[in-house]
Length: 68
Image (cartoon, rainbow, N blue to C red; front, top):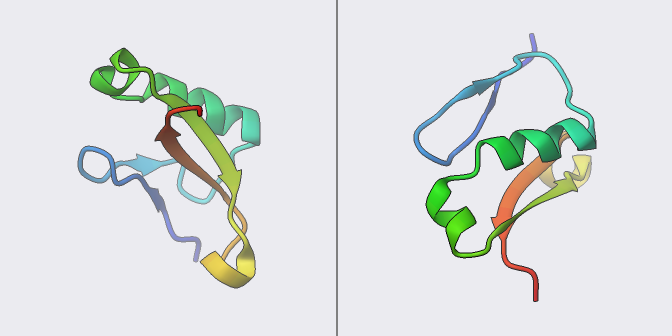
């Protein structure tokens, strides 16, 4: 059984249960669902690969941050 993937932004949200996103799809998903207040103050979407040894699976993690 595949576990669903959840975001922890504003509550929990089911995203494509059992499916894998490509890095480009994850980037687009993050850009589309970024809260307005983060975009307004200059945050960008950052996507990185999770490590199976550390995070327990191979998937893309989506986060928001400012470029230095």
